[in-house]
Length: 223
Image (cartoon, rainbow, N blue to C red):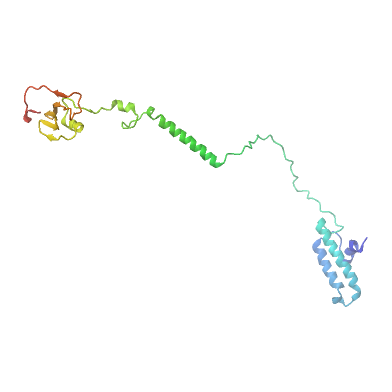
């Protein structure tokens, strides 16, 4: 056995055994080095012995770094109370779809396309959707019950409605409104006749009309 690995003689010189532990080993080593050092004893004959002890100390530290114990010490045993590692149990796991999800931008484009298609479909079928708004475009059901405003003169029509159709007359009298060469007869705020000149036609179904009366009636007779 080489002197640099004669750990048995090292333990004897330090007064230890292999099971002493690293802390006790280092403490005993420092005490022995102090005892053998020439500066402390003044005896140069112990210098080779001190050098050998230093080499054994370095070899002991290297052994401890590799094996986790001092030379000659029993290997550390695993604790009996440590829980055993459970073997992994294989379970039937459902198949995982590894198909990558579409990028977020593609999802947004798809959602936008679906919304646009829905809005287009609603717009195309707007006429089929009933509504309570009589002014709603394409609502035939609402327009059916709305009274249709007259667009042309009719005998017996009140002057307010006639004014909305004809507009303001060029000349206005109590019994006749003139629209250029055309005119409208009025009695008791009702249309009793008209004449529609070709140069200035009136919105009427015929060129002229006259409502038969029992005779002239003044403003006082209306009521």
